[in-house]
Image 1 (cartoon, helix red, strand yellow):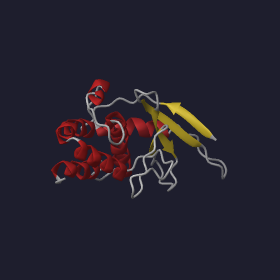
Image 2 (cartoon, rainbow, N blue to C red; image 1 turned 90 degrees about the horizontal axis):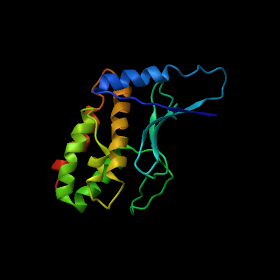
Image 3 (cartoon, rainbow, N blue to C red; image 1 turned 135 degrees about the vertical axis):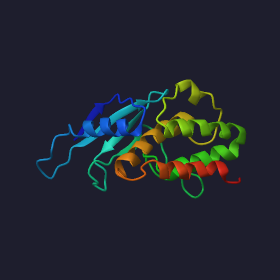
Image 4 (cartoon, rainbow, N blue to C red; image 1 turned 45 degrees about the vertical axis):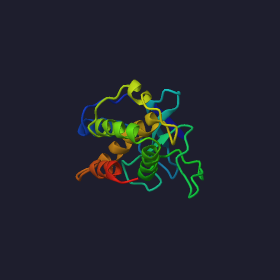
Amino acid sequence: MATNITLDIVATDKASYRRQLICEFLKEEPGTSTSVTEYRYFVDTLQDGNRIYLKRPTALNKGVDFEVRVENTQFRYGVHKNIISTGNRPSHNDIAYDLTRKKAENLTEFTRLRGLLDKTYNCMQIDDAEYASFSFTSGHSVEIIFKSLKWLFIEQDVTYWNRSGRIMLYEGLSSIWSEDL
């Protein structure tokens, strides 16, 4: 059984995002048997109408952890760059791979993406027109990548509650800008 919930979480710092999200998770009903209620928290809508949602619980059963998922989107790529899975769950590697493809396609445009990475990391709001200002043809849309990344950062803040949270992911992605082609 799945319970769908639409959230409108707006914050300007990672502590506020984390607090609001955990408060929503605390509203989940406690389990009473071996059956599990799956929760889907719809947190963003893309310009094409597909939605980003957070799925709980996760397969690894890590308490308040969640998976970031995007409706009707495939993220897994094989060695020959073909999609090999129906996975709608972006991983850190999927995001890095997509950014690397964009860098190879157009270095000038890619350089401008750094501003979106920094804004996303710093919990700044990004207007949809900013996403649309890029002309990449490789990989996923800039909107899908960065709206997913926003929630991947928040997931890291929840998972690594008393540690660095989002910084490790940010530093890993930042290194793509300094790598040679």
